[in-house]
Length: 114
Image (cartoon, rainbow, N blue to C red):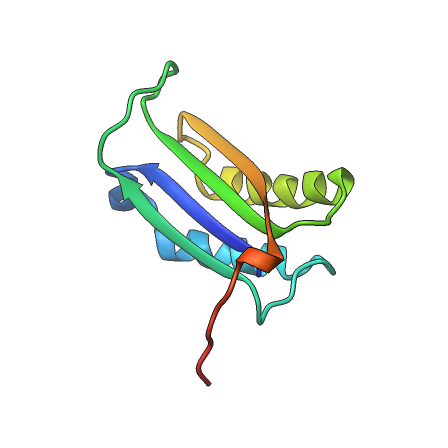
C-alpha cells in the first residue's frame, strides 16, 4: 500500500494542475517494479498556513508511505522518481521535498470495494 500524500502551499492549485500532478506521480511510480498500480494511492491537499526560509515562499512536500522492509537503495530510487516528477511539473515552486516513511503492515488495515 504505497501512498503519496502531497501537501502544498495554498494558492499553488490556482497556478498548477494538481490533478495532473497526482496523475503524473502515479504514472511515474507504477513504472517501477516495486509499485503495484492496484495498491498505489496519490492525493494532494493545500496547507493554508506556512512559513519557509527560502524564496519564493511556496512549497510542495510529499510524504511517501511504504510498507516496511524496502532497503535504502529502493527508497532512494522511489523518492528520486517522486522528486523528479514534482520538479517537472512545479519547477518554479520554492521548495520541493520528499520523505519516505515505513508503515507497519501489522498495524495497517483497509477495506476496498469493487
